[in-house]
Length: 230
Figure 1: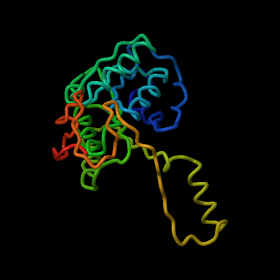
Figure 2 (figure 1 turned 45 degrees about the vertical axis):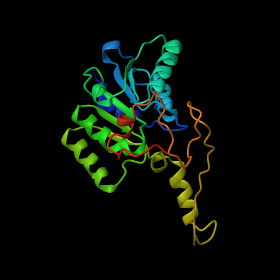
Figure 3 (figure 1 turned 90 degrees about the vertical axis):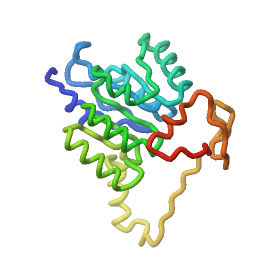
């Protein structure tokens, strides 16, 4: 590769996340053969954001997307082709995507139960990874992700922007200086409206509910137990 290696790029620029802009343009213009070829796994709301962010970075080329929901894949690919005049490779099974030697790195916005396995598989396939938070479903899985990254010499980054943002350490220091007195108790909330999905079913119902026709539920469940959809 050229003087800007894939590893250098991902170390400096994989800070994608909700509401975050990507790193500044690279130090020199790269030719098409030097582009870092990215695939996005899981292209719902957050994964759609990954597609937008990465496709705007000079020297990066979004080449493929993957989702167990055929409707997501088809709509995202069509929208991207219309906006960018680029036809993406599309996959439903992430294992097929990881076999693609033309892909250098992946980002993943899959459901939480997939985070560890997709990261480990990507490392084994020789690809660098940006995985959304939470890093893993449990501590044991997280350690296996670290072990895989080290064993296969891959860059793996987790979306913990609140740890790396300059604003948060400054706020913590301001609180430690006593500006709001002694902290005895803290409580956090995050309320978000959960409207109906593409199949008209309201998310978060007690269920069980029918699996949408466009979803391969076996692939969606992956390492999780195959239980009725709720």
